[in-house]
Image (cartoon, rainbow, N blue to C red):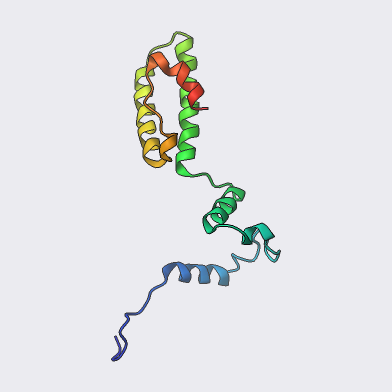
Amino acid sequence: MKEGNVNPPYNDLIGDILKEYTKKGGMDNLQGHGKPLPPEYFSGDTFQHFQRIAKDAGYLPYWLKLQHEIRDEAIAIAGNHKDGATTGLEMRLAKLNAKIFEYNKTCPPPMQKGPLLLSTVHSAVERWK
């Protein structure tokens, strides 16, 4: 550190990566490059802008991806249970309940749901749609 310099040197790793990527031409062919942003991007809250841009880009939050996985697995388990098959369903249900626990840790509180039981899996499918 130089004398009189109070702040240590700043290492901007992400900035360095972006500069290198730009030098290689990685930013040249981006979708929408050179087009003006729509006026609605400049109005409202910053978080709303992030949500809109993320949605337009096809981003899904982790908890929403989990919700879709849980729904699909619950439908599969309910279909197998309806057909009379019970072999392996308890194990699949235990794995599904572990996913539900993970989902409840990451989703908004009003969206949380309880674990599934084999006897109630048919009615639970409707709650997960």
